[in-house]
Image 1: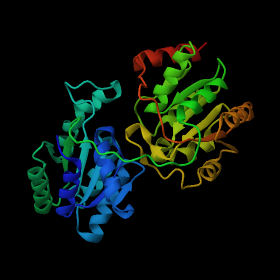
Image 2: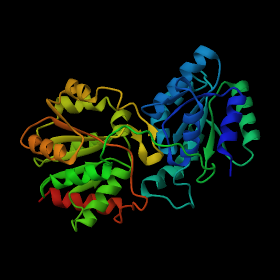
Image 3: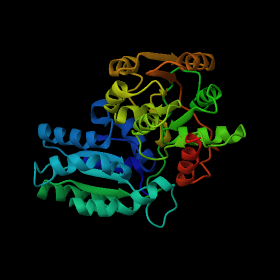
Amino acid sequence: MIDTLKFYEYLCARGMDFFAGVPDSLLKNLCACIKDRSDASHNIITANEGNAVATACGYHLATGRYGVVYMQNSGEGNAVNPLMSLADEDVYNIPLLLVIGWRGEPGVHDEPQHVKQGKVTLPLLDAMGINYQILTDDYIGQIDSSLQYMQETNCPTALIVRKGLFSDYKIAPEDNGFALIREQALAAVLGGLGDQDFIVSTTGKTSREIFELREKAGQGHANDFLTVGSMGHTASIAFGMSIGTDKDVYCIDGDGSFIMHMGGFAVIGQNCGPNFKYVLINNGAHESVGGQPTVALKIDVPAILRACGFTDVHQATDEAGISAALQAMKGHGKTALIIYCRQGSRADLGRPTTTPIQNKQAIMEKIAQ
C-alpha cells in the first residue's frame, strides 16, 4: 500500500504540484489529500476529463511545468480528443502525467458498467501511443521515470492505479447548510409520481437509492432506467426517451453529471417536448466517489436552465417544497426542479440486484404498454 500523503508530497517535490481532474472512487484518498493540501489554484476539479487534459496543457504552455490529471478509467473516453488532437506528439507534443483509477480490472470483481472499460483501459492507452506504468509500492522510481520520460519526449504518460493501493486519507464533508440528504429527497420525488411516469436516474448513489426505495415500498422497477454508467449523459438519455413516448419522463440528475456535459442542455431545452421533466439533486459534491466539491452551488443553475429554454424552474429544500413543485410541473412543458441537499448516505446502501439488460428490458416492456 502507498502512503497517500507521501505520494502527494513526492509529486510536489519533483515539481508536479498542479492537479486537474474528475474524482474517482479508487483515487478518493489521493483526491482528498490533493484537496486538503493544495490551494484552489493548483487543484481544479474540472467538468470532465477532457477539460482536465486541456487545462493541464494550458498550464504547461504558460509555465513549462507538468500538470497531473486524475480520472477514473471511464474518463479516458472524454479525454481521447484532447490527448490525440492537442497533447499528442504529432500535434503540439505537450507532456502531462495521467493518474488513472483502474475500475473493472480483469480478474477483480466490479460493477457491470466497469467491466468493458476495465478490459480496454490498457489497450486504449496502447492505441493512443501513451506510455504507462501500473503503479506499485515503488512509486518513487515510477514517478522519477515518468518525469524523465516527459522531459525526454514531451509526451503524456500515465500511472494506472489498482483498487486499494492508496492509504486512507479522510477529510470532513463540507456542510452546505441544507436539511435533506439525497435519499430523503428521492423518496419525496417517487412519492409524487404515478404508475405512468418514467424515470431516468443518474449514475452512482442516486440510482442505487432509487432501487432500494422501490424495494422498501414493495414496488417494481419497470418505471426506472438506472443509468449505472455513462456519467453526464443521463439528461440526453431521458430526452431521447421522451421523444419516443407521450408519457412523462423524469430525468433525475446529479450536479456533477449536470456540469459534465452542460452543453447538452441547450439542445434539450430548445427541442424537448412537454413530457420531458428535469429534476436536479444538487448537493455541490461528487458524493458517490468521495465527496469532492463541484461548483454547482456557486453558479446560477436556475438561470442556466432558463437560458437554455426551460420556462419554469422550481427550487425546493424540503419534502413539502418537492411535492408542491412536482404538482406544478404536471401538465406543463419544459419544466425543471432543483432540489438542494446536503451530503450523506447510508453505510449499508446496496446495489441493484437486477442486471442492466434486465433493467432495459423491463422499462421497454412497460413504456410500450
